[in-house]
Length: 182
Image (cartoon, one colour):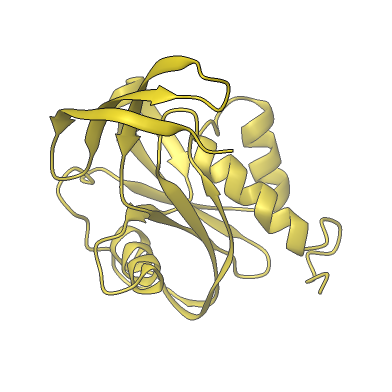
């Protein structure tokens, strides 16, 4: 299946995204108007020391509240892995001896082209964060898996990318012993 784009018009653009309005024809001959947000991929990093996850917390304007989440950032470096390493260091001060991509997903494929690359960071060394513009006031917190589950249950963890990444993490780790299944 593949819809044909008849026309595409840029309706908004800034340095992080482009929004288009596309007139498409479906495989069934229907004509639709689709709004699409185009963004570069982003890296989301799960810092895991074998007992604790490291979260970052920051104010998120779109939802008008403070949000706890795994460190994440837009593709701004030579590679997506380099982006993951740099975002982890910038937001938490942590360096990882081991960082590997464990999965990926699309943020909102009904209206969004952005892909999230999920990385697991292990063998962690703590350092000092170097926060970027808009990240001032960012906090870090170490939590156990049980504490993270409680945050989800009580609504203190609501970030969709973090919840999706945790799901990917749990597919490769045994949720009882936190040992790799593979």
